[in-house]
Amino acid sequence: MTTLIVFSHLRWNFVYQRPQQLLSRLARRFPVVFLEEPMQGAAADTLECLYPCAGVEVLRPHLHGGASGFHDDHIPTLRMLLAHHLETHAINDYWLWFYTPMAMPLATGLPAGGVVYDCMDELAAFRHAPRQLLQRENALFRQADLVFAGGQSLYESKRDRHAAVHCLPSSVDAAHFAPVAGAAARAPATGRADAPRIGYYGVIDERMDLELIDALARARPDWDIVMVGPVVKIDPASLPRSANLHWLGQRDYAELPALVAGWDVCMMPFALNEATRFISPTKTLEYLAADKPVVSTPIRDVVEPYAGVVAIAATPAEFVAACERALARTPGERRADADARTSVVAGTSWDKTAARMIELIDEVRARRRRHAARGSVQQASPLPPARPASAVA
Image (cartoon, rainbow, N blue to C red; front, side, top):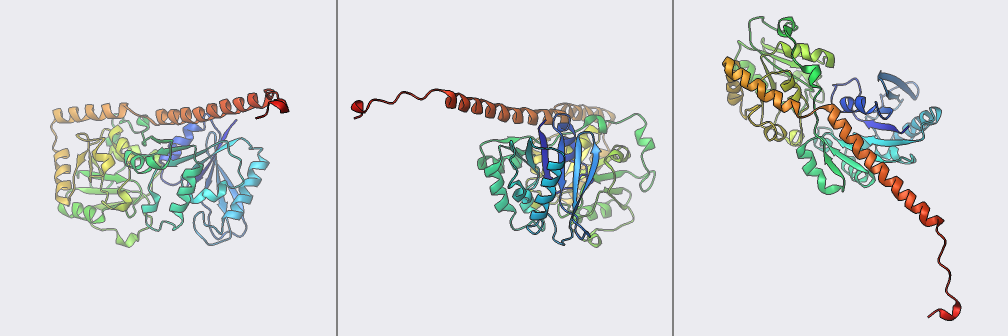
């Protein structure tokens, strides 16, 4: 059975998002070996093996070096550890699947049946992006059989760089986030019981508009602003503070529906910068599946597909006003909004996205089998008889 060997800059137990959603489903068809970035400063070079769900094995390298990520210093050791793992487990039929081009050197020496690049972010635009990233992405485009783009903006930026780029935006597990009767009353308490709650969950990094969050909290001290997620790549001391602003840290994926159930409005307060130019936030559909009104800054991959369903606000004043309108809706407006959200969510699912990826992989594999069969027939065919010397012109 063909195995997917996945190279990821994100850890499996980090925020549960596109890689986990897709690979946990693809694992029903292909066993998945998920290689994370190395952990630094280990006493000895080892692979920790974790089994988070059926069909998925996570390999977490612990290396003695101090370099971060898939650094050149780590590549020889990672190659050795991975090769030993594959040999020990008799894994010799596999495809390579990349979430980061920085792992591209690890493909050397691996006779893969195919290569996939699932591009979920424009990593080169992120803070502290490695200087070799673009060079390695070019190499990955040359090697890849399939490129999946996690949003329309990413697709448009990549489609001219490869012959098989497919736009497969992030989707939603609607059942996971579907509202349950009485869930709001049982939701974890955050702030004051009688205050409207405006909430966000996700990674908190350079993509967040901290000034907007601060302005929102200060403009409406009678609201509680709830921020859920890990703080990375920015100084926690830079986060705005006020009595009605609550930073809850990372929560498990299983906890999110209960948290959202207690919110009156869900928000996406993204800054408009290079790091957000190509993002397609997974949480958009999750908020809609939870049947919550959503207010977002004008991120392109939110504005275009969700016009009229998600409220768009470009300034702090507009953001406050959009939240106020969401809170003040009449029962009729609430029903109409709920119908619109249901219609959008019904059009997509992670199961459909994973199934489409499997179709595309199978198409490549079938094409290769046909090509190999033609090659065998040609090799088996008798050579045409040589012309007699007298007939040679």
